[in-house]
Image (cartoon, rainbow, N blue to C red; front, side):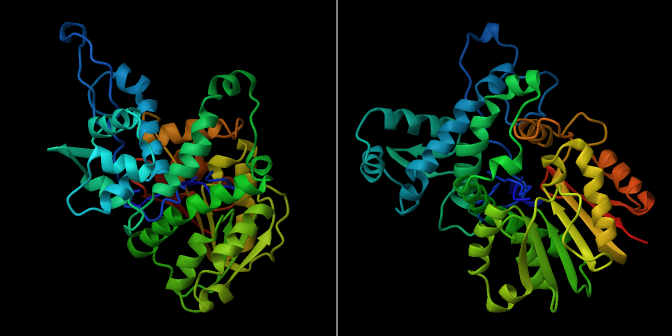
Length: 398
């Protein structure tokens, strides 16, 4: 699905999707798949009343830093606002940085509130301030500037900032009532589907590229089924890396429309070998022939559908695969010990707001359902993908 994750690889960034929905990562335009979250600013209290300092990651220390957790949303909004205003691009356009006045002029803001935003961005280390000039931190320059090849700001701006951020505000209600929209209803709106899919695309391209270069040998495969493939990002990368490979993307109708537009931007060779078929992947019957594919890919789908549907997806994949074929399941997951990593756990929690009957994923839960669908559990492989967030499970059909 188009979800993301954001898709990042083990060196820096990532996507959630069914139709999925990745409301981006991302456009995560390409992301280095292993980044840490910006450290949130916390309210300063007298030293004797604080037992710990603000941390730079959720895992640091033996106890929770309540201030950093509670006020983390403020840092998130500072980042999203800077992306909306183009602050980072304005600063990057100057060789020596930019003054607050110059940034304000470029953004069309002359009020003191801009200074408050800039001060916050310095405090959370997105910016640096020296002798009145603001410059970008290395991570900001690498990932939040449109002209950078590792840019994935659109994923954060559109999918996270405009879509998922707001759904998380409904988490207590969803937990209590069990009522939440699903991806199919969410993506029935053309603008929502378009925003999510476009935002997810670049991040998914980065993740797919990392996968084929570092994790997976595709070999001489000829037919691939990309279930809930969103923009088709994984298909474009896999097809581009494999002569003769053809891929069919199964997606919701409105997502297909956006995906077809993105396909038109690919090379003629790739365009000719990637096709879209409209389908809600949770449908009991897929419009494909049995025993016809060498690879079935499900990226960000297992965590985006109700728990009873997961096993049915894998059963359909088993039927679609030829003997010797592989099912690739990529998604946000925690470890089997169920104690982290934190970002994988929090992505699972976020999905609750758009998939109230879903399952928090870990390798054990995925593999057990693969085995129930006919795959050999003993031959399943687990790989770390986006560090601290996503994993890849590979199952083989005998």
